[in-house]
Image (tube, rainbow, N blue to C red; front, side, top):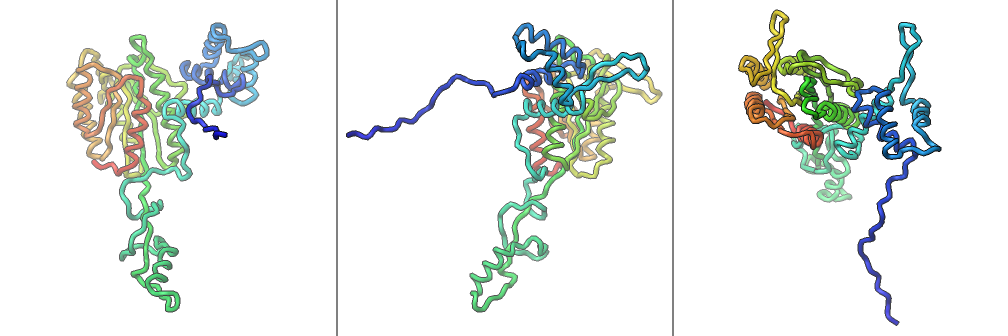
Length: 376
């Protein structure tokens, strides 16, 4: 009787979506909508109802109203009363929703990144540090006793001197190599000038998604790093991470110099040796604030008076050993030339990109910078 040979190969099956509850399915869509509406709950729900009519997202057993009730019960939204005593109020999202939006942005942009326990970045150089590599070397004068691998050293002593006449000498000692853990202070600059929503393209939503994802990455995976965020239009001002979902574009020009000044002021207060600026912008610098408080604005082409101030700021950042990485969401040749000259003045980096892939590039650059000591 012949033995029946087992056949191996691929088995193709119909794709089945992950088993999600009705609430979970709607919540995934809701988080996306609340980001696009800059935290406006009523507008997000209106969009959700429209999508429900078109794509039949709900059932008679679980409606949009049931979903809203679950959002309340689970602590994702709350009702607010007008403090002026008119009795009118509205529904707003809570800090729990803000965290959920940041986590979704992280998953969408950077992938399902595994969280490390220690939450620190490694530099490429080995030497005195506090993270073990598993590599051993002979003891050298000046090595701390806490770095000596006693198990390996005792084993060497037994091999070299025997058990009967046991002795431990300096020649038997070995130490385990360690890695420096580099810490990074990052300032993320986001352009909120009017051009970020011009020409029928929403550029601000991807920009703030990247900011939320980067914030979630740092706070969960690299808690010893710091991230500060600022926005710049006619002026520049810092915003808190929790404000990101509500970020909107304003009727502003682009005061790149003000943004860079504020970013460097923020970084001067940091003790970390590794400092960097990420700038997301799609437009040319078109505004300066003069010493008397008046604004100098010019949207026609590249104004040398404004661009020279930008170059000066780039050089100042270079002297402070602060590299600037610019993510340029535009393809205009004359703007790209300006960014090339700006980058050369700082000796930083520039990426000329559309909205697609913006997050991946920022993540990759952030990770690469964590692996080395940044020098001017």
